[in-house]
Image 1 (cartoon, rainbow, N blue to C red):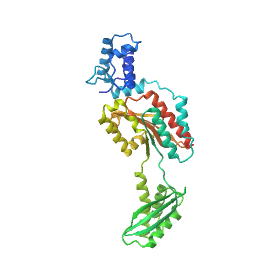
Image 2 (cartoon, helix red, strand yellow; image 1 turned 60 degrees about the vertical axis):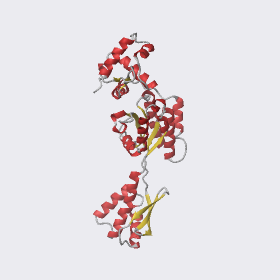
Image 3 (cartoon, one colour; image 1 turned 120 degrees about the vertical axis):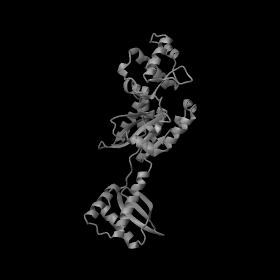
Image 4 (cartoon, rainbow, N blue to C red; image 1 turned 30 degrees about the vertical axis):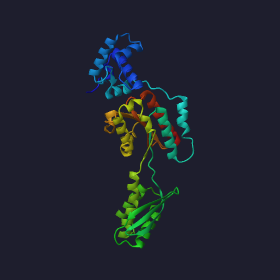
Length: 347
């Protein structure tokens, strides 16, 4: 059922709906008509409130759990509230200071991102997540060390001084001279390039006949570059902190949902792809429950926002994962501020 647009709700229905949503976000449970009547300001009897809630249920905005006479918002109702009714709060000075402090600490960028994710998790009472920039080494030197039994160790030295090793399977009959020739070619012709750039140049040189490599050495160069590209695509690119925050008193009553959610977080590649879809957003992007099939079973929400480098390019995404009843009005601006802080850190 497609929920009714906010413009079609009467003032009374809009106010009852707002009270139900805010009460649900605060308590995690269904909200009854008597509870709303005690809030004050409506001047409606519990019976009149029940009638309004019934209308909202027929509109697809509220649902009634079978074990309760109260109502709670549907995912469509939450979407309507977030998009059309929510009044966002501004992060407090203390919250801003706590987030900004993590970006002033010296050391690797990954450590600052992990610390920022941890603080965001604590402030939001959700799991904090950061999609980090893919670290692609720039080639300075490359070598092959034969191991015997058809294998060699490929050694890549980056311009930042990093050294990485990978075991490479060699084609049958490869001579040691081919290993030396291939390594020299990569170092001399492809040094100073990223792996992606090196592969493009190799293809261009082979196509134009500018390479003096013999067939065996050519195959080794292609294999040596490919193993890092394949490995890099499989590397975890996401930092998760505070997953324990997802197990609150309300969640403990639905252990199957909690197990499902924690399992989804363990599958970082799927969540990384979800976060990656937020790269094109201008500000926060909100995924509520089954709007994304990844969280259709666990009933969880994701709030994510991109952060940029000095050239204005998106280099990563920061956000939180929490229950659908999370405090969107508070957490959305917090995630947005964190993304802005990380952007300043990248400057």
